[in-house]
Length: 103
Length: 503
Image (cartoon, rainbow over all chains, first blue to last red):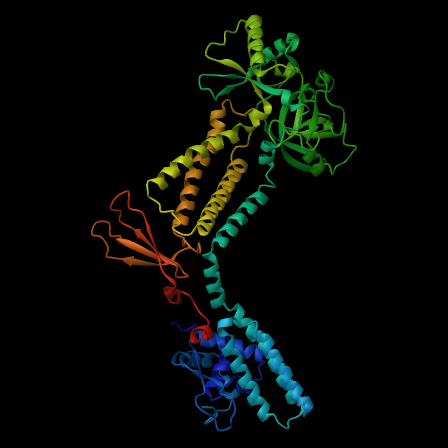
């Protein structure tokens, strides 16, 4: 699939947040401050365009919470994000990187 | 605690409600994702303040936007649009819409109304045109005005006769500072009396009025409404038509038209104006006088009075309603010719239109074909009648053959084209669900000479069957073949929801 030439600032912010390790919808909202009505449609769109991939958590979880759907950036998504960061350099400073967050 | 439970329940209820917006095939997964996030948030938010709970509720409200995205995203819309475009309802809707658009664009079918409704003349059954016909039977010639004077003087079979100029023209009319281009026609002052029409405003012009008022004009109702704002005191007002001053003598009733519906101004003229001209003639027959007897009597009168021999031509008295509806008869004749041609094509086996299914479905099959043909022919008729040279009571040219042939040829060719298209479309539809067949697959390999494939197979999107169409015809009698598929094939074609597939 061809990469979209440009993505919006909001999409770039969400991609950057996920690439930093915030992989769940509600976590992305916490970090970006964006409302759910913006984040989720953006996630769907990015996934449809092949920039994100979603998966369900597997197996029983220690906290006995229901399995959540998580998102990760695809190779194409990383390329597009790299281009977007050139246009929006401040994005890199918005979200602190998370280690061992999610799966 | 009770309040918190209530908020969680509220959020669940919001999610459940929003999930109904999501298409069924994605609903279960969508709800599972949102509820997992909700549960996780709820566990971590234990002991948090009211602010966190409000935030949670607001996030759940955002689920409606997400659900709406699922419902309206382009992919789904495109798929739904593609599926709908294959249905028979879509084609009928499209054709109906096109028909409505053409009707609207024409301004509610003014010409069709003029043809189909009774002429707006008093006792119209007795109004007829008088013309000469020549070697070519459908060609007509105008009448020398001297003949009108002969008939007016001593004819017992006519109650009244009037001449009019066959050359209607675009005239520039100035009303105060306003300038309008209106089609006008020169008519004898006795014409409105012949028609027996009573003017909406003003007195019906009488013979001799043109001499006392040489520049008098009569307006159509549409012109009066548009350019004079329905002014009731418009009579005797002055306007300028083609640089000459004219006086408004009257306004005609709304439905009146003559000789075509586009004429808006009638200039009154006396016998002196027509003296050396050939003119169109309308007459009112006396009660009980037939057209045939009027023709022979009028012809004999002219022979006696002027010595005209009528060699190679005859006089024709043609009832005005028949004259107006004549183009319609020609159209039906063209349709009557094209239908057998198309029937022969089907009968020869060139197109496979056999439904090959139960009687009820066969009825639906033929009803759809009939509705499609009817709509297509209606569109064609509206286009031809409203957008080709309009019907004149007496044509502006010297020959009806030239005026009507364009629209007639257009209709004849159009009939064959639209019927062929309707039948070809029908052949490429599923015999059970009437959806348009899709998924074309080439069978065999391209030929060496024409480079086209031997066969194309089309499949019903619902998996009801396959249509086998020969691309390189072995012979004229090589029709497309329909093959029913049983229910076991449907799962290969139909898109099922996730839950349905998983059982």
